[in-house]
Amino acid sequence: MILVTGATGNVGAHVVRQLVKRDIAVRAGAHTSRVLPYTDEDGVEAVTVDFRDPATLVRAMDGVDHVFLLTPFSDGAREMAQAAIAAAQQAGVQHIVRLSALGADPQSPVQLLRWHGEIEEDIKASGLAYTMLRPNGFIDNLQTYMGEQLRTSGTVYLPLDEARVSYIAVRDIGEVAAIALSEPGYGAQVLNLTGSEALSMTEVFQVLTEVTGRTFSYVPVTEDAARQGFPGPKWMVDAMLGLYAYYRAGKGADVSPVVQVITGHAPMSLSTWVREHAREFTRAA
Image (cartoon, rainbow, N blue to C red; front, top):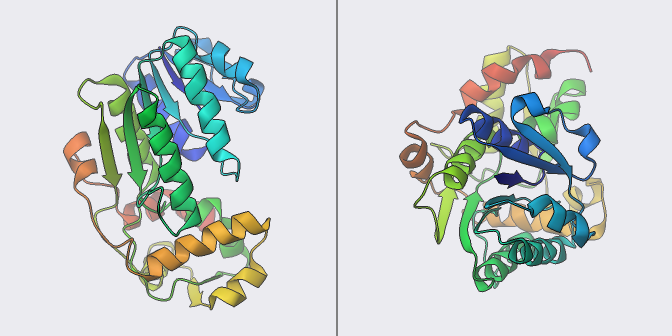
């Protein structure tokens, strides 16, 4: 049995789908199991996973061999992950596949990457087998976080300058995760996951315009201007601005062969992803 946490999110949902395609029994966990769009007929058992309630973690992991560990984007993510690690040890889980981030390092000056690095170290210290998935920025954030703005104004303002980033589709992350969860040989692995090309945000928006036939534009702004416009608490704004600074320093431009090696196919290209989601960007807001 495999437990997938964060099963209502973009990455978690793709992990579940990929495991179902492989006819593997899945337990899908979310803060409220009633919102999970799965049934027993799908081969998926829906369970409640509340990272702030250890009892739900222990129940969700009962009889589980492998766990896909995706914690919420929160300033309390490390404490949540530690609770999940303790529950995994108590339940006899053998293997954790952790969704981390490219550049994760407990010594990183980038807050978000430091948090991911600290969680990775906690998992390694637990004695459990582990696989760390370190994806680069998600192509899907064009829809998840920018979709409404793109539909209404067609313009996005970001402090990225012309930094190149090898963006990856979450579908590819989900497929790699499912393989690492269900096939042998992925213990003590740290896998850097990227797309097949590094693009500037200007180039991203050129592709978006060419494929959809609607004009979209990216406007680079200063970090101070971005801080004033970003919603959310200070920790979240600091985390995102730190990541953008990391990209501006050229740290997100590397291209990794890992997706091709593990899945047997090239990562999804930006143009293919946009073609599949074009309707979302051209429909009325």
